[in-house]
Length: 378
Image 1 (cartoon, rainbow, N blue to C red):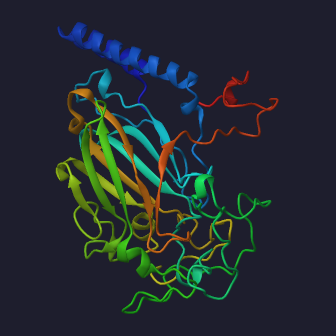
Image 2: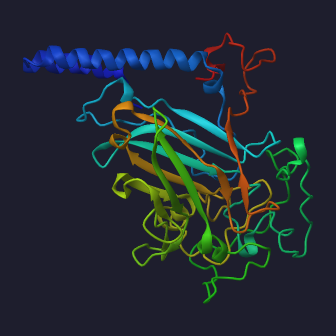
């Protein structure tokens, strides 16, 4: 993370060595950025919304991809004002009547391709959709009537709203429990996909993920004006990808630009694309690596991310004079999903407040400030 206070000290030393005539004005700008960052940090310690932790959706394995995003290294060569300092934030999205988030969006500012870009990361609850398929599918048996325990019917929420079924009860190993199945084939030896890319014997196939899955983002500036709306492709055939599959972003597959300039979309990734290409698991295009209901990492593929995650970077200059405002999704979609409906309307809200149970403190609420700084949520 970029430290404005350290940057100011370094800047002072450089100025002393070089004797630059413009150092006074530029140093003032650095002080202004440091003051803005200090104010932002102070606000983050007092805001209940900022004290909420990202819901711990299981399934990232040993990849570290479940660590919350923090403000990245921003471009030192780019002139900026306080409006450009996008504050790290996480927003949860809920179906009406439910308390378990269906998805989260994290936002931070990072330097990408020589420009400041707003990094958005959308993560779906694995109880709705996940990266398990074929023989490795977990929790999909009830979707198409395959043998195995059926998913419970949806409960009725306030006003008769139908809710997604809750995840399995907590077990000793984490939020969900179940026996670990036999390990998946060693890398390089899984079955190759046929023409239909697998039938998905347990109710979910690799073909399902390639066929129509996408996420639609709505992005505004600080004035509330719509700046960008787009569908981000999850995974498609790609001759340039090592595995033969990659996300085509807004340029193809199930992705497209609805509002805004596609050139402002600096980069994108999805969790399945990373699994197949960056992490070297490109042979798993029929059966995903075997796991259990806890999404325990498989020894053969320890970094496989079983969660469905979309990431996108948007040029910060796209938001004009008022700066970045926010990003929302209006629905979660997967075809198929584990829920009774493949598309569920969601609304944004504060994430559930959680604290590390290892703190030596009496029970705390989100409004409490613990004495131990290590227990505070910033």
